[in-house]
Length: 90
Image (cartoon, rainbow, N blue to C red; front, side, top):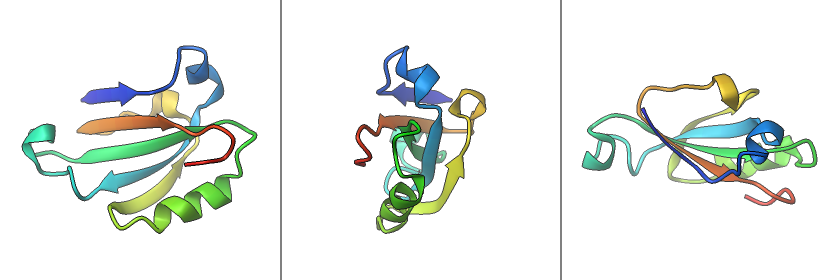
């Protein structure tokens, strides 16, 4: 699994929850060696999780959008990009 994580080491302890979706654009391409590609928007307790989930669900490039309660234990098969949500914006 290949992980790209935009969080700092400190944010990996505070931004542990995430909205995760399967990227329909990158999944199955040479970028992912033909496997799945996932995008995760990591956030802390100041973010409105329901609003963030609705915004990600509306994206045309995301499939199977779900909430992950602890990214520290999340290890999907394939490529994972973790983006930082600050101030509730995605």
